[in-house]
Image 1 (cartoon, one colour):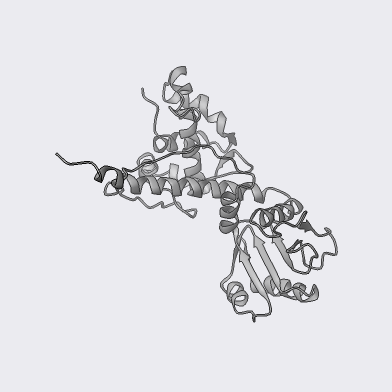
Image 2: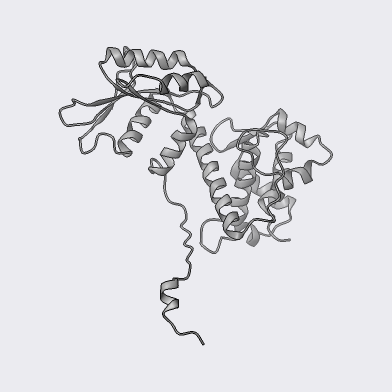
Amino acid sequence: MSIPKHNEIRFAALTLLSNGQTMKSKEFVAPLKEHYQLSNDEVNQMYDSGNGPVFYDRITWALSFLNANGLVDKPKRGVYQINDNGRAILARQDAQSFLYSAQRERKPSVEAEVVDETDKTPQELLSASFDEIKQSIYDDILDTVIRKSPRAFEHLVVRLLEKMGYGGQVVAAGHVTQASNDGGIDGIIKEDVLGLGRIHIQAKRYDINNTVGREEIQKFVGALAVAQSNKGVFITTSSYSKSAKEYASNLNGSTALVLIDGQQLAKYIYDYNLGMQVEQVIEIKKMDSDFWDTMSDA
């Protein structure tokens, strides 16, 4: 038979996890090969671009879907385990067809929305696919970052701000403060050679479902005052409460405070190529009307 699509793999992959064991993504290849009765040639078939084996890539996308929709957990990077939501889906009479046609959610949800894409143009489908790929990578970035130590996270955000251009041409512009007695400041970026301008950083590596409240932002503003600083960046892997965001936006002009949440953090890491590498480049061309219009019509 032909290599199954990623949405066709979802039900079989979730069923493999139904006994509660954990599995690495590569461990799905052998049982799914047997399930779909694929030949070695089919399992090893590469994309025309050479960008990896087709079957394994589709397995990883099926697993990404299950995780993004809250049906499986990732105890650690590249490892999957079914949860109660996943078991509830398998218990449904229409589980296989439901998983086949459901679309990827931005947030965990058992009842994934089914979207009809038949009216979309190829360009719209390409754009939507690109957005989905990026969101999947953002999720992977955050999942990885959350599993690092708090100290490693502090070093990461300092490197990120340097990558973003803060510190300019100053050598070793950023540094992480001492682990203890840091006064509520986790990192500092020097904006000029003499260090007259400085950006102070607080980095909180929280679970993605956590919310940073107003009180924590107020404490950081207090730490900025003690450090005689008027520029601060609060970075978290989670999100901010409405009151925290309102407080930060309503500070008087003497203090500039930027809040960066988990999704924005992942986007910055992606956009500024911190720990990232280009996997594939797709070039799409259009006709140059200026060139063709100079030619005489029949």
